[in-house]
Length: 256
Ligand code: ADP
Ligand code: C5P
Ligand code: MG
Image 1: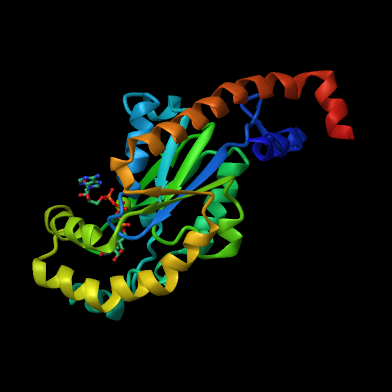
Image 2: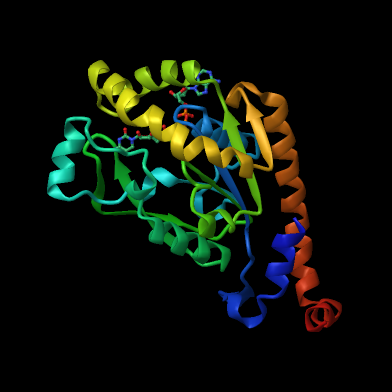
């Protein structure tokens, strides 16, 4: 909490937004293997904080998925992807420069635009973006959000959703068939050839960077409630810090 606060206070005049001081959001990274429940955990957090029914421009908490940052493929990579022969679980499958830039913009209190990704065509949807409005808390979830140190170091809090691999495979198969336009053969081959080995090589070793590990994912309501309460504390402090930031005492703090 204090890290976020200090950064905000030290922003000075750089972070002016619509005549107000732009706030540095509290940035939470959420990682874990495929189908561990990252997206579901983030959705639960958003629901419990009453954010889901709010207009996007009004949200205090926003959630962004690393999947929005899959890079566009070359024509030959695209053909490979259609046959299930492209490794979407490798760190290089993402536009990591855009991830870094976007998170830096978010931390600077800027409004950002992020790509919209389509798993069915394995590509970014042209001429379409999602606008991310400045918020107090930002969740960034994905399989490899803790892989590169320059991205990892931006998070104020790191969560790792830890669900056993049998359960993950059991959940990934129907999800990919229903929601991502795949057939059983494709999902199983991709899992065996790329998803499982890449999880072990790139994702699992980043678990050690987590501040909090959430066993059993979305089933773990106790862990989710603890995180929700922590975010509520951040939200109530955030308002207070803005007032403090404008007081002479805090300017004195800043000078020191
Ligand atoms: P991730 O984002 O980590 O890949 P998801 O949140 O998409 O994981 O979950 C994978 C699939 O499993 C989804 O279809 C989701 O609805 C389902 N799922 C997630 N958590 C649970 C749970 N606790 N119980 C049953 N199904 C779940
Ligand atoms: O939501 P989840 O964490 O499962 O999303 C990441 C997964 O999406 C990766 O394991 C990757 O194999 C899969 N993926 C895919 N096809 C794409 C992009 C990602 O199967 N075009
Ligand atoms: Mg997901």
